[in-house]
Length: 333
Image (tube, rainbow, N blue to C red; front, side, top):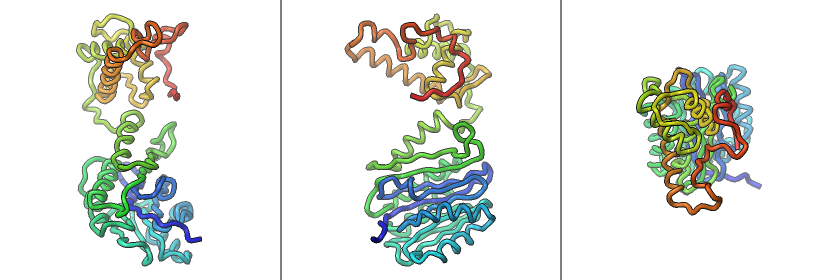
């Protein structure tokens, strides 16, 4: 039985300033993130697609790990593959050299474009403008590698992308010790089935960026005092985390309430020890307080007194928020 073919456009890239290797991909194929992208810190990144040979991922990384260049990896993987003319492959090595391969029997339009530190490739596309637009977008977009990869996917889709339509997308990026718990998997996000997978990937990434990454400019940090402190106290009060007076004084009770909010909403990565707050965290808290206010005014009570308590209020028998102020363990639920 012939393995399924699927149209895909992807980009592999390396950012030398941060030593990050990454892959971004979209396809009219369910769960493309489970097939196409591979990456390893200090080694490189690979995208295997068309009639994908998934062995290209681990085998290619093994070659890169032994010091092979991107060009050598492409040559060695395809030379030993009798189905190579049905394959498509993009890779970037430890030094940022990139290479691609498009087999002569990949479904039209199929091709690639290689640039400095990146390679774009695609098959079953509307035309060569898809990979061309991806390359130009990656070269000219602002931001870090993540911003530029997402911009490249969007640019490719604006040129028609996969001519059969859209279904799934993924973003994989590795950086030494930058992931959760000190892992090298910095970003690993997938949209497996969605009518607009790139936009959905961007939405999920924005939430991931907010809670898990530290990419904001430190110059935007706000001192927790005066109006800022009063605003935080107010929103924490609405949500039930803070029960004291709205004084604008960042007292121990306020700090404990804020730390409990940080922990319960998985913001430990944004926790500060210098009485400052990231604008993104403050905005998120404000949005949650507004949503809670709306809930209380539009929802009929089910449990007596339920609308008088925010989601941060401790259950009956719970301890005061101040006893939780030192906890920094991420909570899952």
